[in-house]
Picture (cartoon, rainbow, N blue to C red):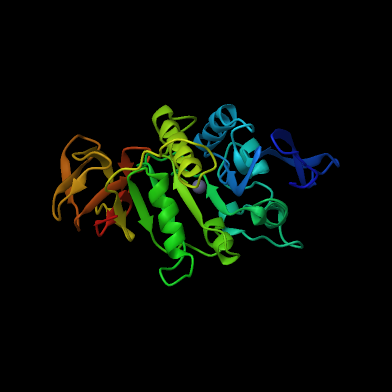
Length: 318
Ligand SMILES: [Zn+2]
């Protein structure tokens, strides 16, 4: 049962979870799907669009919902395809109602701001039922590699379980770093639910390649934890980094990249040339560390002191 949503064994129900009201009294409702498998088992919670402009996750959920049959399912899947209602409708990351980032609001507050109230309803009426939790994100509209984040401290009792979930998702790159307070990937482990934050690329609209990897990742989780039959496709070796180092430009100008995202960079490897508006190269930016070229801004221009990319470091393997 999710809010008012109830599904008998071997059935699937679609409905809405009321999380607030608009100024005119119209209900603010989050779509929710509950698939209750024919066979007993665990519960997977999966959500998308916690940041309003991160759309790849909803396409992943759609594809999973089209292919997982309740007759074959062990346990339950709870899917919430759109979490940040107000931000999604405004086509932006943050909620325009309280200007908050939803992924700093979990587990929410009953008497909080609009985003905190939505987080609270969701956390208490859906997330808390889960044995595993997937919070699908991406690098906003900025180009980023496909990766998975573990957001609890390495001393946390669920750190191992979260890292294992990240490995099983199997996208090839993992950030293992305690995140800021209020992330679902921290709040859910606090109540005993292993949780990861898959980051499926970064783009405006949909990116087919990132969506495919996300679908593979969710299916891996469903297969590995025995919700559905089949063999997960988990890479033999995956890269794990602990932090990001920014690539800072001293000059303002236009950025001509000399390295590709996901490239393994050596320390002092040239990453980008900065050209002035007349086309003269003013600066060549080298990587300050060995690492993976992780993310870059959407536009190839920078003001002095701005960043032209992020490097994931140090490189470890899992
Ligand atoms: Zn996000």
